[in-house]
Image (cartoon, rainbow, N blue to C red):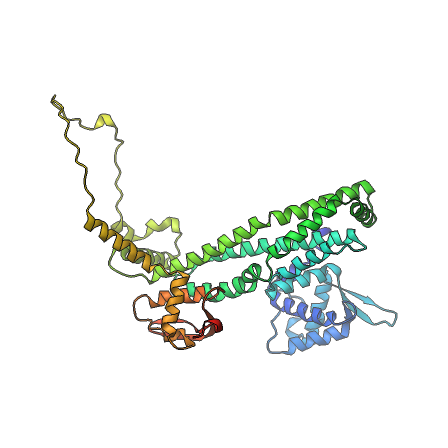
Amino acid sequence: MLFDVVPENFFRPLAAPGKIAYWECLCRLFAVTSRQLSFGVERDVLVDELQFYFDSAMAAQLSEEELEGANSGKMSSRDKANFVLRRLESYGWISVETDHSYVQRVNFRDYAVQMMKTLLNISEEKKTEYQGYIYTIYSLARSGGESPGIALLQIVENTDALVTGLKSLNANIKRYIDELTKHSTVAEILDALLNDYYSNVVDKAYHRLLTSDNVSKFRPEILERLEANSRSSRYLNKASAEIAELKEVTSEEAREQVLTMLHEVIGTFRQMDDILGEINKKNTRYQRAAINRARFLLSSGEDIRGQLKDILIYMNEQITEKELDYNAVYELEEMDRLIRIFSTEYLDLDSLYAPIEGKKEFVPEKIQVPLPDAKLRAGKRKAMMEKLEKILSPAKINAYVDEMLGERSWMLASEFPLSEGDTFIRLIYVRLYGQRKNMRYELELQKSVEKEGYRFRDFIIRRREENVR
């Protein structure tokens, strides 16, 4: 159980009112101790480090609740440093020991070291490097090695880390999809898509997953080697002997564990396409949802679509302003004039009037086969072709960029005539498709600009070298 190892009040510093001060103190202490041969250092050195922190103007303040009973009104920076060390010791983050020279040394506890590394990775938003996991598994599977049991344990550990990273990426994209509905303006949607989403998901994880970190490059040989090992008596005997010694189990139990680990890793790699397919679907769904939402907010007019858009935007503003629940939309007074719902009694066939029909002789009429109206068909075909022409595909965006660049090798997005027609929509697709390798141009982000009523992050559109005229 967790609290058999970690003290019950271990997480209290990170949940207390002065949690920012505690966290910054922990980071400074961990940085100092990490440079030593062990995670221990003289207490006076750490007191000096924390005193310097509390003397700085950027230091966070400890809460009065934390300092209650400690004569907080007269505490100096050094007193606060000693106070924090005593509290961290009582919470189980550090331990203080006295060596043979009567010098007190402070050590981070083993579980606190692991916790700090994890929290720092979260704080620094470190992304999973899939290449490291995949290449490690690939190398261990290829090498025969003198320690196949230890290598197998490392393969299982790295496979678990790889799958955890992929599932995390999958969940991360879902979070962006869920948060998309919180953005109510085109600027917020495009910033979420082109800056936040592309920077934190596409560029850092998704793009590498499809290129340098692609599982398909290494998977065939990994599966081939592992399946061969599962059929090799020599490998199974040697790996089982190592596992039996490491885990202190019998040879039969160790052999069963080796086979189980091999089959689990093989099964994981065979089923990895399901996770990758789900990631691809969610990435496409997010981009499509963002573009459609932006296009919806940009559309305007007196037609049914434009009027419905204005009604929905107004209702959303009122709900946000009055802090209503979406299920309580009918609390808005305007809804009474907008929609009328009438109650009625139950109707059945017996309650409807059935007129009396006289008996007449039935004379069948000749069925006339209508001939197709060539003019009507031509008009519909023309309308359909015009609609297809408006669909912005990568090929059309390539042609549009070539047309705008002309003889130039590059130009700024802000140079586009944004006030003309659907130029801004086309510019969104230029930015969106610019991430693909098969496009004839590449992008380079610049500073934010404001032009023709639009505010966006400008970027350079540069013709690729192989397409320079």
